[in-house]
Length: 197
Image 1 (cartoon, rainbow, N blue to C red):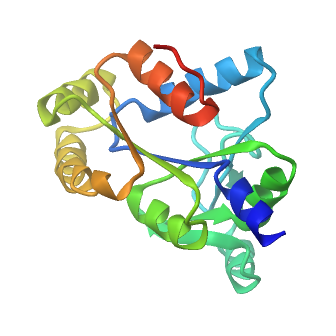
Image 2 (spheres, rainbow, N blue to C red; image 1 turned 180 degrees about the vertical axis):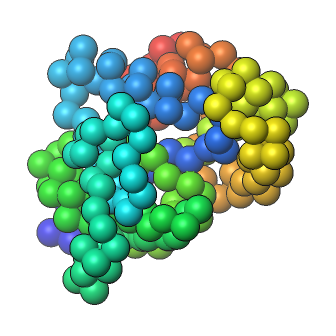
């Protein structure tokens, strides 16, 4: 039984990338492909104490909650990992992941490298993937073109990315997102063992 459970842990897919490397777009592509093929895939939804941004939905983008509820969940050991990011709490719910793994779903977890390392300590057989930009210069250009952040924030993200890229070797698979199409095919190959040649 323990072996079976560990085998299912391989269906937990941890995806990490520096901000601007294209992780969110790649995950959307994976989910769209999974739906078209009727694959059983679930994107883990984090809990957070931050306020919803415009267009975000409770239960779809995040589970939004107050600090008391979040801290109660910490006490109940509900999180595989949790962290404070920019003054807000974020947590990865354990029961949600375990329930979907038990039902033979592929569970995608979009998470930063520190959270990923913490999850891998508890799910050592999980499939871990690090997505890199083609270069730091290209990452800077993408962040500037997004038009979401100030120069200071972009600089902070670029410096953070340099540190994150040093952690890539801690992940079982590494993909450089030069072309979205190629990176999507590489991801599909890793997650679903689809060979796109």
